Image (spheres, rainbow, N blue to C red):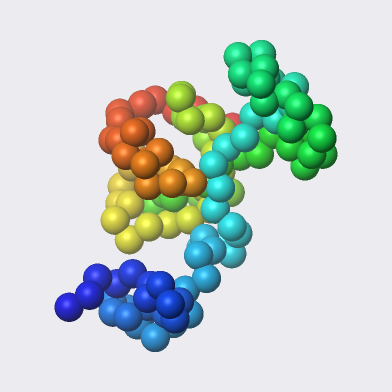
Length: 128
């Protein structure tokens, strides 16, 4: 039996409670998930100066963007902004079926390799 992940070609769930539904890749709030981005004028620009040229040319990269976080909405309200050391600012936009409890978060990464590099960590974040 296949896991309840989307069928790549048809973009439909093939098993589980959402079987037959169209998979859109969006969060529970209907947003596109993304990693945090520091913006043009940030410490990241100072530590990675080679990123400055593309940040200057692409106006949407001038401003910081929060990453996407999944949390248990019984404990952390949707749209709550949280700072995770080593990840940056994120906003709770999703809820995962395996994310249960007050002290569990799931951070979005653009690739599976980045997520594996991050791994599982115990960190102390701060809410805004």
